[in-house]
Each structure stands twice: as C-alpha cells, then as structure tokens.
Length: 587
Figure 1: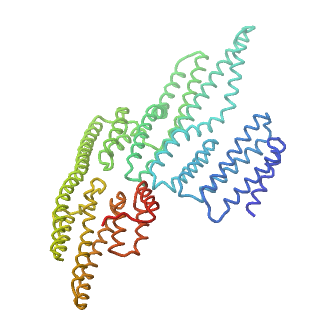
Figure 2 (figure 1 turned 120 degrees about the horizontal axis):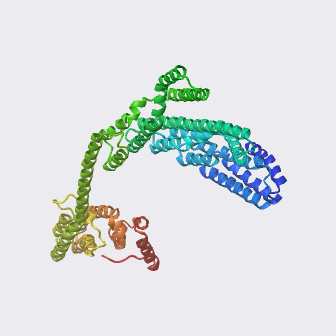
C-alpha cells in the first residue's frame, strides 16, 4: 500500500512530463518501473543503505536527464511540477536514510552537501545540530566544521537574507542615479540646475544611509556568527576534552573576534558613549552664535546624523553581550593561548601552530606568553626527537636480534646434527634402547636451551637453510631407528611370554615418543614451518602414515591447504595431483 501510494503521488509529475514532451511513453514506463522497484526495495523489513543509495542515484540521473532534454527541446515549462517534485522526493529519501542509519556519518554528510547545493541554509543549520547530537562525542572534527560553517557560509547566508529586504531601495537608487546622470548633462535653465543639485544632494544622503545600513547588517551578522561558532567550539571541548585541534580552532576564532571587535565594535562603542556630549556642544554653538539659515540647516542636519549614528551604535552595542574592552585587549585570546602551556595532549606540532597564530596576532598576545610557548614547544620537540631516536635504535636492535639469533642457531644446529648422527650410529651398533633415549634428550637440549626463553626452532625461518629440515627429519628418524631395533630384539626372543612383555614395554614407550613428536609437529605447523615449508607437511603426513595414525592424513592435507602461502599451496596441491596422492619419502 505504501509503495502504490508513493507511485500515485507521481502521477501529476508524469502528466506534466507528457505535456512538456520531455520523454516518450516507453521512457515514461521505464521511469515508473524503476521507481516502483526502488520503492519496494526500501520498504523491505531489512533496510539497507545500498537500496537508498541506488534510489537516490537514479533520481539524480533522472534530474540531470530532464535538464538535458529541456536544453534540447528549449521547453522550460512546468519547472515547479517536475524538478521540484524530484527534489522533494530526494529530500524525503535523504531524511529516511538519515533516520534509518543514524550511526553512519557519511549518510548525514551526503544529505548536508545536498542541502548546501540547493541553497537551503536553515536545513543545513538544523542538520548540523542533529549531526552534532548523534556524532559529536565520537568525532571532534565535526564541531570545528560546524563552527567554520557558521563563521563563513552561514554568515553570508544570513547577511544575504537580511540584505534582500533592501533590494527595492537599491533598485530605486540605481534608477535615480541613471536619471540624474542623464539630466545633468544638458540642464536647460538655472532653476533646473538648482533642482538637479537638490536631487543630487538627497540622492547622496540616501546612498550613504543605504551603505550605512548594509555595513550595520554585516557587522550584526558577523557578531552573531562569531558568538555561535564560539558556542559550538566550547561545547565540543566539553565533550572532547583531549582534542587539541578544537583548541586550535578556538584560538583562531578568538583572534578573529579580537580583530573584529577592534576594527568595528570599538568605534560604535565610542560613538554610543561620547555622542551625547558632542550634541550638547553643537547645540550651544548653534544657539549662542548668530549664523545664517544655511549654516543652521547644516548644523541641524549634522545633529540629526549624529543622533541617528548614536542610536544605531547604541542598538548595536545592546546586542553585544561580551566585555568589549576585555576582548579588544586580547583577554580571551590570551586565555586560550595560556591553556596550551598546561594542555597535556598538546604536541610540538600543535604548539608550533599556536605560536604561528600568536605571532600573526601579536598585538593581542603578550611577548611573555609567546616566549613561554616557544620554550614549551622546544622542550616537546627535543623530547620527540629523543623518543624517535630511541625507537629507531630499538627497531634496529630488533632487526639485528633475529639475524644474530639465526646465525647462532644455525651454527649450533650444524654441530648438533653431527653429534646426533654419532649417537644414532652408536645406538644402531649397540642396539641399546638407552642410547635412543640419550639421542632424544640431546635433541631436546638443543631445541629447548635453558639459556634462552624461546624455542629456537619455532621462531626461525626454516626456508633459509636446509639444516633445519634435516634436524627435524633426524628427530623423527630416531623413532624409526627405535622401532627397527625393537623389532630385531623381539624377533630374537623365542618365548612368547617374554616376547609379549617386551613388545608391550616398547609399545608404551614408543607411543609416548610418538605423541611427544606429534605435539612438536602441531606446534611447528602454526609457525613459519606451516606457512613456508612444503616438505614439512610431506614429512608430517609420512610420520603419521608410518609411525602415527593414518586416519589423520585427510585432516593434515586440509590443514596444509589452509596454512601454506598462496604459491606454495598451489605447488603442494599440484604435487599431490600429479603423484597420484603419493607423498615424498623422508624416512
């Protein structure tokens, strides 16, 4: 029902499109079909941003197409019924998306930019208020952006709105100026010349009055925008106390306010305070001295002008809630500047920016404060340089540490590889199970050294040197030698009872060795062994097939596919597919 109601609302728009002959019937049906499809998509139970985005993009494209068709047909009728209808639909879609997805800042900013392009100033102001309510505590930059809007675009929009009321007066003055220039070229008689002189005099007075009104309007607008921007920045600092950027923006604003009060407000304040005395002096001069009527008229006009200026200045000063003398002397600017000296989150870059602003507005900031800021900025800069140097040295040590550790571990691995080979040869010659245990203990001593806190074999990149793979193969080969020796011993025993007991003892000991080896392989599978070495997985699968559990082979293949890097995984799978599922032989 909602979809059909929204479709029915566009019937008037479609009718005017037909009258303007912007689209043919097939194109109109396509437009209605797209709108119905988008209306159904945004009315679903599970709302998505992409549905609103596609609908908005479609309407914007349709709006641009209408403009192109109007240029082509030169038919600009029914603008209110067609373009404004599309714009109202876009506003509705933007509002719905902002309501549905309030946590997405990009949705709000898109609606705000849309209103700015349309020139809807009050809508932008209301949107900024709503955005700050929703996202003001999480993004301090929004407060600075809102203050900048009120200080620039908002100020100009308010001034244009107020000056639009003087449009008729400006037009009348423009017409009168043209008339006076035309008549002043060839006056016909002295009476006409005197009349032109009188009209020119009144015209200049009206023009001065209009310029005065324009200047007063701009001053009032600037005053309100500065006040609103200050309110936003102070409120943003109350919500984001650690934001140095907001403090910098407040410093710039107070410098701008001090400059504005010095150039514009101070003169009006002086007029509002001193004009009464000047009027009394002029009255005494007029009535105590004999003057001509022309001089008396000029004095009265001057008196009226001064009185009018006094009233305007008094009305303007009545709107000023700040302490004018305190702002002009740079009091507010110094207060914000002094806060940088104790602001814990301020860095040397922030203080450098504050010093630059203070030097540009040095007439409002004292030399002592600037000197303290420079000293504080230099201290932070030296601390940053020292910290950067310390981190650089620390990173260099971290880079050199693994290299030296790798060299040390590689040399130790080569030595222990030879020692383990000697122990295995000795165990094969003596056929003593204690020599097998001694070889395992020796391997663990190298693998888990007491002087190191980490496992050398786990942290080392095994793809650098083949000695690491040889050592791991030798670790599993110890179990193969133990299994071979036990089989020879069991075959030499003739009594079944002794044979069964010997087999059970070996089985218990061998299962413990296999489980210990499996734990080691599982641990290495999560390190660089599992991601960089294909032979590791072949060795692991061969170990499970010959010494462990064959049912683990499919899971090992799946783990290898997940752990190996992209190129190595492709080689691993290619080898398994070409070899018919056979593995490499290491043992």
